[in-house]
Length: 137
Image (cartoon, rainbow, N blue to C red; front, side):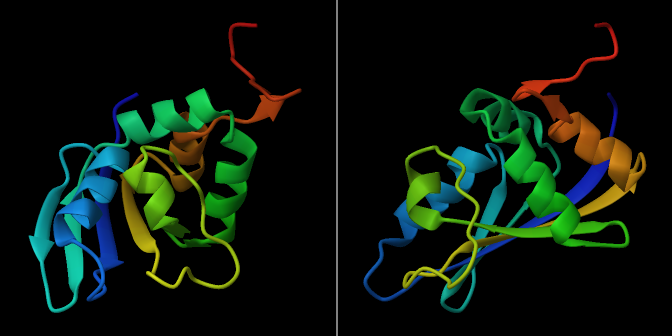
């Protein structure tokens, strides 16, 4: 599928943290993200969700991801948060409830093309018995 998205990722960097480790956490989830240092936070941009989608499939958390995407949807924008420590380990763990004391990684995806629903179906397809439902059987 061809898609066009603008991804903005922000993550606080606490005084007790090493900034490079927070950069690694972001890049583990969104390889190729362009990360810049701000005042006490990192701001990154990306345009690809291939590795992110592959991780959702590998970790078998498609239903959870769909819930987070639809729950954080506003128009053509999807917003959700990820646990920083898990991301540092290369694992996607959606942050729900109270934020972690080190802060969470906040992700905002602006979907330009196709529709938001089609994009979500591509990144985290619907499942049946935990397996993605495919058009070909």
